[in-house]
Length: 55
Image (cartoon, rainbow, N blue to C red; front, side, top):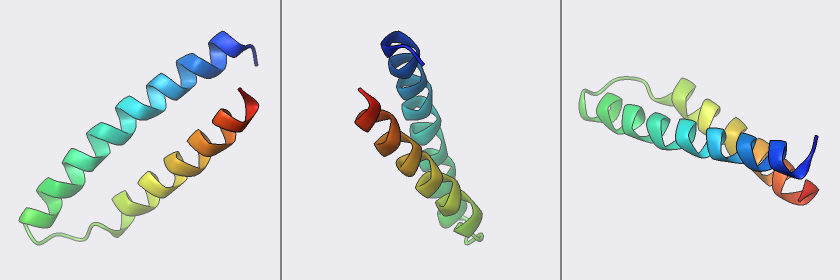
């Protein structure tokens, strides 16, 4: 991956992360299970950490 591709992927992941955080807040307010969303957030955090190391 080139530096530009890594930066683009990071931007995509950040947008996904923000969207999922909002989804999780809505689920919590409705008393729904947030575990699957929390797992997705964790996976995004791990991928972001890996990509930042590559920069």
